[in-house]
Length: 628
Image (cartoon, rainbow, N blue to C red; front, side, top):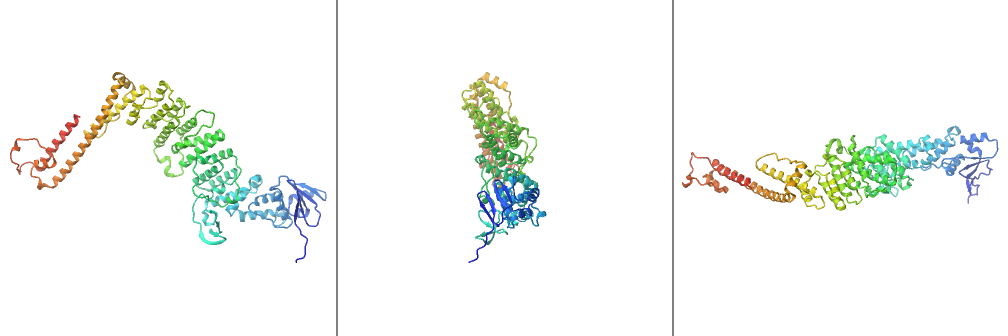
């Protein structure tokens, strides 16, 4: 049995720490209410701050308090052990606080060779900055020590190191990617029970770092994004990280945003704790970090942010900026994302005022923002295409909100007139929206309905829409009569077009434009019953005309086929009448027909004989068609 020896070390009794060395303590250091009963010599030989205080004191034994000591009593215990010659336990979790404490106590090489400040700096550069996980852990411990870590440049060095790792292919250095709970060797091989399997991770995913940096505080996350942007990280990757961070700490976004597919790609998060985040501060910070880019998923994310911003009642400047960003890429939005509920005291179900402001930003946006994908840039597409998309989107939006019983007629009108008339090639969408609105608001007066119907250009209604409107009892009678008149004009125009086509006219007749006053005079003179009857007759004539044209085209194609076949077989053509009988045509009786069928060498050729019945047949078809 080994002989007993005196145990030396630190002991704690209540709130007091003692060093068991057989000598009475001559200095007491108080850190956050914890008393450390120590000896002057070990401390003075390593700490410049304590040495200066001891020089100013004339007492043999005295007590001193260290205010705002970095890391508190636990970190001071590490410092004391180092001063007493024990090994300093430096880890990625405590390296920042130990470095700040060593700087606070002025533990430089001036007060001892290879002092704690130089040791901590060496450990930080050689171990922490070269490892992704350790760098994240070190950064996470920087928040309570912001002023001092800025002085030591710990934050900036860590951010630069993380940015460099993100910009570099992780597989080259064995950095973590697609860990899924497995371990990885320094060379990048997968470990199983500590044994190198030789298998290497072959993922090239660019989002492997999203989860790990989401454990940083808002301030550090913002600085990291700015550093990565300076380093040249692709904008789509930065936006992906921002969106991931926002979804994690703004739970409301998950209702309108699709989650990241696949398993979480992380290596450090299993040993990290989520940051404490103020949602208002986070949302305002996220809005500032977002670039001036456009994309379908990005636009949907902005609309989700706007919803959350309205719920949290963030600053008006933040909401205005989100509305402006959405307006600049409104053509990429979807209807369900635009249906923003009202979170104020308004009686309406949806925030139509916000939608109107977004349209205003869309119309006033002069600068063209680029897309994340170059092929989707607005610069390469016609300028009218986004306007048409937004017009169609707005027609669907008005149709959705029209069923709200509290929605005022003037709001429907302002939403419909927010876009210019040239944005809509057809007004079927507006008609459908008004029909839904009239159905949900049966108490509207005829005058209010007529004022709303004035936003529709009846000449831009399709034939189907006109047919529906002419039988719609929810529309005012005056509007129905105008629709019937323009429906008749469209039918007449279509019928005239068919006639021109059959007369070998290449250009169809354009749409007839008749002033509204003239339409009113005709309606008042003839009466709407006569107009309805004439429309029905025109429709029947159109159907008959279509079937007759189809028959003529089919018969004409058969004649052409027979002509080609007959032309190839000259030997079988003995007479024009034989050809005529073969293709199914009848020739008019002539005086020479009484003679036997003989072929005269000086007579007309078989082709000339065939052409005569063909032209005669065609002229009869033309005559019958013109009398239809």
